[in-house]
Image (cartoon, rainbow, N blue to C red; front, side, top):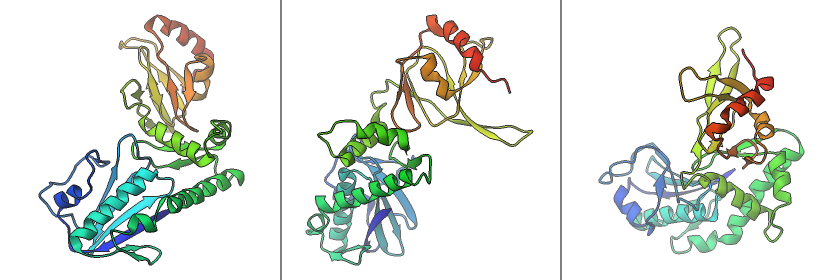
Length: 286
């Protein structure tokens, strides 16, 4: 689910659009930012977000004399606000009105009144209801929502956990708070965000997702099935274990942050041999 707005215009100047945002800290998801002296690229699609505030950011594109901004459901109110800033900036440069996908035509002055907090909440309540229904129908064991930093995995365990969190907040607010937390959990660089490697077996063609795990490091573990316990030397013993067994091996050190991802407090080098011995009954050789 998403909602899009468009402005009919020739390619706007990139620097002028950004200047019109009136915001200092806006980041681009993609690795390479276009030259600020250029006009907006034809057929370009870029994703922008506000660090510490966004959950999903907003998608900005330009094609066939049409500047478009798309907002995915369960985006934060700040994401909607960022999208509106892009639209009003371009609408002012072009001297045009803003068209919603519902057919509305709105001036830049009236955009945030026409699509205010109640409308944003309604959009996100609708998105959350779809997620809830998928869980009730057991159509999926989990859902992946694309975040501006990393995926956010939603499933029965997470939804049940949120049901019992801060009752002073609505369920939607609890959901959005967790979504935002997952995006910036490693913002202070305390946790190392481990890579997920996909390994294919030549004989069967089966694939498995695996991350490396070692001592003296606090981890943010991604959606993987296996962990490879590895030492720091080339001769060090290594073991492959199911990731689901890790909380049993390290009680009190593992915290699920959503349906699939986990924070793990560091294992000291002095504890490593003991962890390897405890892991041996669960290790898989092939």
